[in-house]
Image (tube, rainbow, N blue to C red; front, side):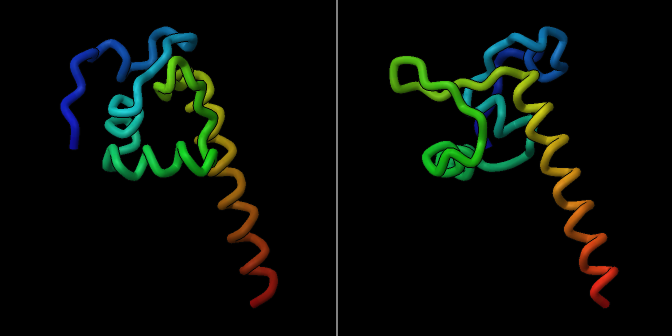
Amino acid sequence: MAKVKRNEAMGGADPTLLLTLPEVAHILRLRTSTMYHAGLRRSLPWITISRQLRMRRSDLDTWLDQQQASQRRRVERMRRAA
């Protein structure tokens, strides 16, 4: 996993802070290559600046909340179907 230099980005103190791809990978504990492929598929709310992927910390938090809610709904549907 890539080393991340900006420790303040990890805490999410500033919700408008733009995170780099390695920083997002570090937060999600995923490989940088996994995050890059997710960015190419547009499955994450990336911003492209000069061909570089960036993401607001607040957008990452919102996306994580949406993913969690989606998984809960899926589990509930599976329980009802069983």
